[in-house]
Image (cartoon, rainbow over all chains, first blue to last red; front, side):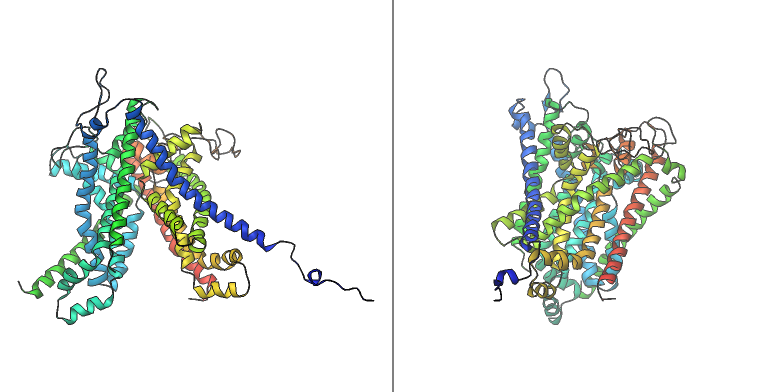
Length: 306
Length: 295
């Protein structure tokens, strides 16, 4: 009598269970995602905890830190930790740089999408990509060797000034603004343009009255992203701004920013000392501001019309 | 003013803006290359740098830059790829996915100096390593990860749906489909993105100041034992990269030929980044041609 083999033994089976690979892959991919979350959270917690130490352990007054114009940590008897000049310096260069870069960037975006869509994009796109590629220290170095002497000789002051910082930063954030603004302009539906032209509007009227309002939230996002980059930039600014702890009174005055003072003093102060801890507090301010920028961007993208 | 005139003026302004930007780029490159290339010589590229005397080279800095870059990419690429696959294939719409997206966004917007400070806290002080190449590479990983995740996610999402569905329809499992269908199709774009990210890492200095340090020990290039302290391959030694070198000679350098060294280094740096960009374009289209039927 023939032996009956049960069906499950007659089936060909792979030695490797397919579920193994599936599960392993899933685990690997999940792990990567978790590492990303962990990195973000741990940076926030570590910098937050370290940044608050100056106020909690060393008794530096938070009000004084945020509002005093005097930065004098080396004073033996009565050291004063007023970060206001640096906070002001950071915001000043950021806004000034955005003031220069925003019209240029959006103008370039309009040039690429509206004025010369065929060849303009072919020429300007690689130019923007190359500008992104230049490292920030090189921008700083060129600022130091070309811009600073030029401003000293032809405009006035020492050359190391808010103005130099503003120019270097505006060149640095120009590609960011241009790229995002170009994407924004390019995604505007063609119908809007054609509708406007059909009503007899000129190209400029179309751009000003139809396209820019339609793209406004995205254009603002571009500017805010550029500002976020300018706010966090350290070395390029540090090389041209003069790094003084005084409150600047004109655009030609030397100044300091949060990033520059951190860069300069982090290596010269003992880890754990008050002088060092206040630098971490400034790092915390940078972190908080970058969260604020993200909130603004999220608010803007929620209002995006197109 | 008639609308025709204002239209013409506006057009003129937009063209002027384009011209300004183009001449800005030409000016920058002219300055970097004209001043820098004449400093570059075999001697400059193969001599160690000097702290006090003129005539130092940038041999160690170039090596460090590439070495830090390679180690960063070894860590970043798998992690970024994993994150990208997760976001493109596994993430279900909902709170967790939104949160990860926020994390990527936040991570991308952190100032690099803050990442450097985190690196100082985590990889230098907490681990007790001191300034090391590994610490620098890990800090750069944090800096680079969001870019890599976005690049891989976009690349995987842009693979045509039909290909994926055909594979799933043949009974191939999800992970196997990702491995054998999606990743190869997305490979050219991922590679291009990775090389562009590498260019960004290569020029980054602020995150490295407090993690990889401002000095390089005396290196012995005949020593290939990665555990020896004079070996260039040792990942637990401090390393000043090219970008950091440009900053440090300009701000705290004592050598008399600061300008020459900085000019030459800047040229080497910019040329390297340019090569990365060209490679990204070249390899991207080459691989694309090889792997697909398109011309």
